[in-house]
Length: 410
Length: 151
Image 1: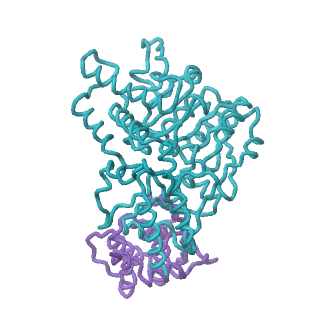
Image 2: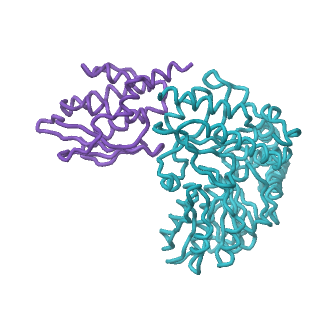
């Protein structure tokens, strides 16, 4: 434990009401934040306040509540912009989740730009949400989806990627952090090389946003997506960052109210900037909740969050490695605090059921990353994913519950 | 604290999952179906050799899965061998109600006791699909449907 003096995890835990409850008569050990994170009281309060005191539709009325609601909604956009260090709020689009953000780009950009034989490069690490939208648009346009391999440790194979890039490469869509095994990919090199060969890049930051500071201007990705509920905000809100010139050149995705400039039956002209991609009444209160969540994590500071999580990762890796027959899947050099593992002869679903009885919540299954599971020749794994509110006692509870799996299975 | 887990993971179940019976692909099988649980990726192939008048002369399976699904598949093949198609369907019907914790008059004759071993599943609703996957595949095989998914 290096400089943790100003990072008080017990205080942080008290910010999250869920930790006052028990599960199966045991204190809750929540190690499934990679699937969805718990919510601090400030997020719940911000959303409640929005419904109780300021609720009205945005961008429509001239009345008082509509104005306040609009200011809060657009205020949340500014919070997201600052958090991502995007050049302008016009580059921040609110969606339903990261999946919708990717589908938006695949459809709007892909449909307008892909031709038969063009290539879309993904990686073996991808979540299904960064595979299937591309397959769907490839089917419609005649483009081809290719996947960059990973090595035995779960590292993105940069040399293979560089060799795959070529004049046919139109889109590169790669995760920032693997949801299933925690690998942090070399996004800087991936983006630069793609740009050198004239391709545009989308980065799936769903697992990165809760763990690290984002900087769009330094990163230079054309598109970057994340989801609100994994970064301690509510469900139903996602973010798509798109470079201004990319958004300008893209046709809309969904049509409807709020995304238009002028509608006649002969021709409709579209709004500019983010508005072009936000058809219909947006998730107003969810955006406000997301803003509160981002303010919350930034007040703690990502340097401290990152250091705390890396401490937990090292401790958990060390403790779990002492268990006979436990195999950690994915041992990349740079990893986020996600540990996927298998136990000889014990199916992950049996692990999940047994540790749950000890109050330990982990994810078991294929983690919506079946090509990755195939790579490691497993049908499923057990996955513990850590967040800022986890502590060493959580690791100890996990290890003890995994040992009880061994006891039961003899 | 682990009483319900001990109930779920009884010795007999662990034994069947570690050493599944009838884990093979009979060359003379004339009905088969593939069962798949997209939630966990578990997969099972059920093979039946059906004689005239609906007698199940042989039952076997192959697949990958958790202890519950393997044990259930293994016990199923032992139980349905020598039964008629309608008897096997009737046993499944009762068994399914049993593991779902529904009202039932489950009676599989001399096999009742064996299947009652899996009754612990009813305390774990997320695991009912594991316990019934092979049985769904069995009925699909009888119906000459080749694929069944739990979703």
